[in-house]
Image (tube, rainbow, N blue to C red; front, side):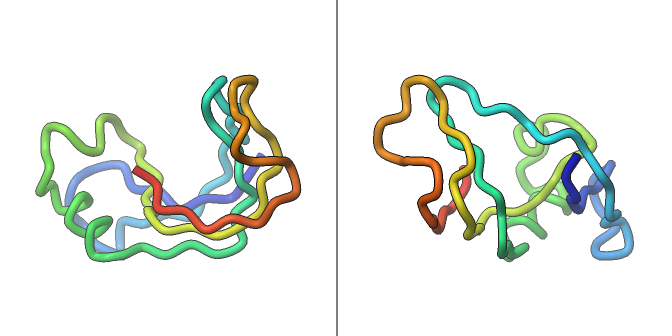
Length: 94
């Protein structure tokens, strides 16, 4: 399990962000799994929560926001060649 912050509907701001525990995801063949040490919720995340990109993003609820992260690669998909387990990374998630 991992800890995360999520929201379950559009709107609500910080009051609707909930601390939860969710299963650790497995990376797909072209993805990496990052143990996040630092994350931010930036203006894009707030706009998505407000529904600016409705009905495109987020695609389903509950949603875990976070675009900017830094941490360590802990698992790589079978087709990933650019990253290795143990590398420190900074990423902008899309």
